[in-house]
Image (tube, rainbow, N blue to C red):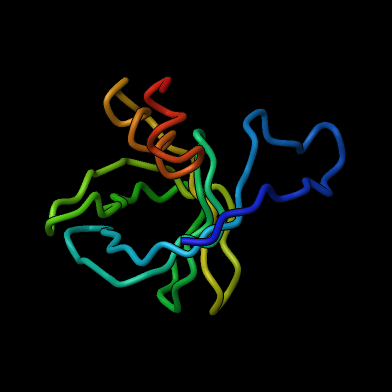
Length: 117
C-alpha cells in the first residue's frame, strides 16, 4: 500500500484535527444492512474518504470494514459528513476503541512504528 501525507487545503475552520494520508485500501462498507465495495483514498485516525458510486446522504451512519489479513476485517462505524455525487463520501469515525485506533495507526504509520518498536 502506498501512503503519503495529504496537504489540507481547507480554510482553518474546516480543517481536520488529525493528519490525513493518501492510501488505496479496498474495503466493504454497509448502510441499512446492505454491503457495497469501495476504496478508501484518504485516511486519518478520525475518518476517511470512500470512493464508491453508491449514493449516501450527509448524516447517514455507515459501517466500514477494513481488512487486517487472513480474510479478517475490523469494523468501524462512521457518520457521513460530505458526499460527492458518483464519486464517494467522507465519514468521521464514531465510537472508536483503542484496539481499532491501533489498527488505524498501523495503516497510517506502519506496524512497527504504531507498536512503538
